[in-house]
Amino acid sequence: MWFRRDLRLIDNPALLAAIEAGDEIVPVFILDPQLIKITGEKGLAYLAQSLRSLDESLGNKLLVCEGDPVDVLTELKKKYETTSVHIAAEYDAYAVARDARVEAAGIELTRTGSPYAVAPGRVKKPSDATNYRVYTPFYRAWLVHGWRAAGAAPKSLQPLNQLRQSRQKLNIETFQHGKHLQEQIFQLLEKKLRTKDLKNLRLKLLIHTMKQETLRASMEQAK
Image (cartoon, rainbow, N blue to C red; front, side):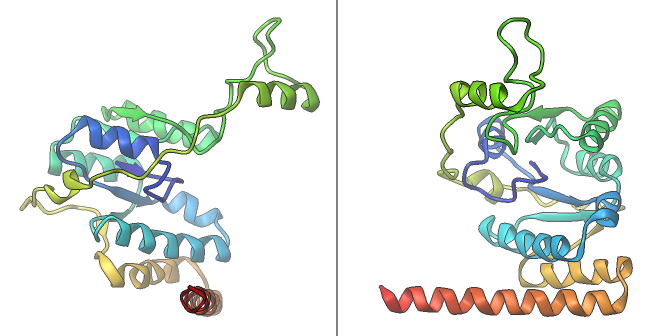
């Protein structure tokens, strides 16, 4: 299961499809250097925190790798002898080109759902099946089309617990699981950002974490 934008268990059709399709699942997130270059400080801080949260929700079994998606997935395919990679479909130009490169390398991508309430291209003019060019008619048709209800979290993560350990070493950079995951991602980002930017990034994340802990404590006291 290749996590991209949907870093969660709840309402993740691709994850449910992966669990239903196989008896062994490798959850992976790829730190793509091309995307790191164009992501701002706040976005990187949010990503680091979201990955740690996802890793915890997966029982510390999220595999975080750095590198070109083609290289990373090729290595993982060899190690775990995977038959397909489950993903949520993406539609921006870079994602489409990236996924095409992955498939051209012989890696099967199984698309289920997307990050959108209604996937791009589904709402078209009924007269000639072309895209709308005026917003108001598109909006009305979008409401009529509707969207699926939010999905539940997986009832069981047993396929993750059955993950076999391979002795084959990976030729790609990977990160430890658990509490050290977030700090390791920061170490990677330190190579990409100026020291001053990184210090600000760490401080912002610390303040955000403290606010969250204070909010949780207040909610517990209110119960």
